[in-house]
Length: 302
Ligand SMILES: O=C(O)CCC(=O)C(=O)O
Image (cartoon, rainbow, N blue to C red; front, side, top):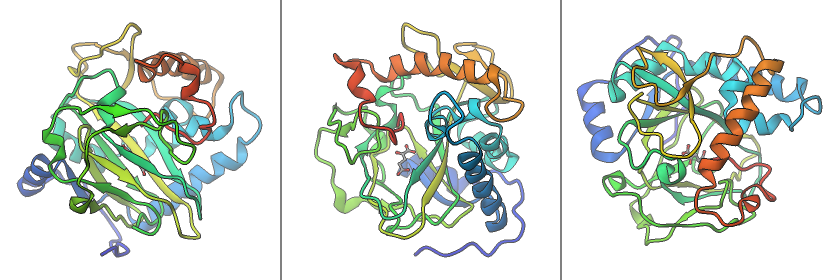
């Protein structure tokens, strides 16, 4: 049952043994308290300031920058991505060397029919079925069954990557409308309800989806995808990432520096470079790559 977090201060703590075992067994862990409700509200305001202040003045719609690789567009999401409270939990899963590979605001507007179909994240990310990636999804508004929170099938991450079919469905927020093409036992699914400031962690092979937002408020998730530096990078183009902790010895990806502010010219150029390279990876196997972005203004790489 969803409950507003009452905490006034949240300290840096590693996951305990029980939480780590639960993550390994189920492929997810939630909820974990990360930000106080006040901090979540401040981060929501900072996001909504960006949406307002940069509307109509950038080469792309501001929402596009916030939906994919937002860590290159603005330092605002990085405040949370680099927060030791988040990184301490991520370190419990991945170990001391941590790269931020991707960062998106996953927003479902109030009263939207948009959904996310059942999928496994790693399907199109050029990392094979690695165990060395974890997604931290941090609620900046209530994520409830009514607002379209994520649903997880516990234990489904123990499977390899299963076949997915591209649907390009208009109501689907994923870039290709990709959907698991085998039977998903939805009766086993668990709703990952989160109060503002709470986090879920999920494995890249976990079967997950989310429904429409039937509430009058936006459902806002800040989605942070972390990898270990030795995670394979498979693709013709180089991939990119930002060092968060420890060292990147394998150098399998180009290391990028944090932006000094929001939408600076140098980072807008870098954004285009990374977008083009990652779009190639995400479009892998598509005959008509233009379809990937057609009519999916709200779509993310997920
Ligand atoms: O935010 C959602 O509803 C889906 C997010 C998702 O699929 C993911 O973070 O991997």
